[in-house]
Amino acid sequence: MRRFDAVVNLKTKFISLFLAVSIFQLSSMNLADAATKTGSTCSKVGSTKTIAGDKYLCVKNGKKITWQKTISSKGSTNLVHPIRIAAYESARAYKCATTHSRFKFTKEIGPNFPVQTAEKVNKVLENNFKCFNDFFDSEVNLKIFYFTQSDSDFVRTRVATSINSGDVNHLNSLMKDMEGAKWGAKGMVGGFVNWSNDRSYLYFIIHSTDGYQWQEKDDHLVTHEFAHVMQDVSRANLRNEDEGSWYRQIPGYFMEGGAEALGYIFEAKSASLLNSQMQEIENYMSKDPTSIRFRNVSSESEMLIRMRETISPTEPGAYNIQYPLGGLISEYIMGKYGFTKYLQLIKNSGKYKEFSDNLIATVGVDQGRLLEDAAPYVYSQWKIALNL
Image (cartoon, rainbow, N blue to C red):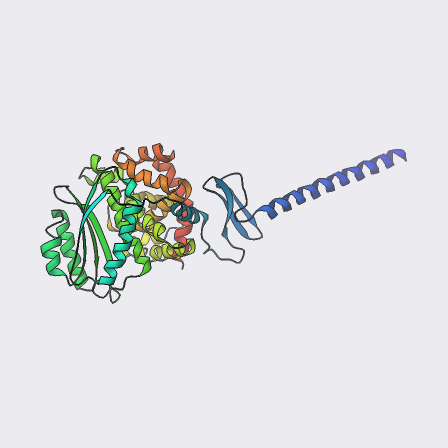
């Protein structure tokens, strides 16, 4: 009888201990879950947690490591990703200079280029001059031109005589496309930057179809082209006309995609507006008929293969898609490593013959690792944008 009582007592104690431990574990889990919300502290960057259908990602914002919600329990995947938030906030924290003493420039405007549009472009460009003045170590000589499709005489006599011979064909083709209404009734606005034949100055060009109505989101175009000024000046000492050499120093995704990301992120008025603008341009650019394989990506590993194609794009599909995919890769760099590190990567392109060496020296990873790390972000944001 005593032995039976002892067994019963032992079982009772075991059950009580099991319940106590279980209750403690549940309480601990509930406390941990309750503490998980956007902005609360987490311990390991990149770790994830799902609570009641809400998905959180541990990210680094400045010196803080915090949780950020990425997917809502209501099913919405159109929330602003923490990488995009971090990229936006890092750009906002960048300290602009107050003068543009490093710039020496002339400006010529075609007679049909709208005055109001010129004023808007001037305002953005002036801000670029001031904000990035200290990026440059020496004087930057620029010739600036604005023109529309109706400014053919101005283009022939002033612009074509000031740009390098390689860009003259591009300019002539551009004028024909604008006159032929290639972009439909809404028209288009664009630009390009390059060195003069004797490399004594850079030309900075903004062009538009007749009647094009400049929108606030078009401000990004000016900063996009200015990013090319930073790239060209930084790379001047190592410049080689061989295209392969160019892409080894500044890969396609960082050259055009990087300029795209810089333009949108630096000019965005809010993270949510940046989100919608990036998604809109990603959706639009995915529709190029030569880029169908990029639209049909079905996994992060397949996305990584497509991302590698934009390092040195050799055919139209990869070349066109380097803008939106490269924008996401560059946005990832800004979000994870900060805006100033991104600018340093541009500046260091004049020091390293291989971009991978630049990455290792600047952010501590080589190109292969960078693309692997960025693939989940690029894939998730790409799929969201294409499904909108």
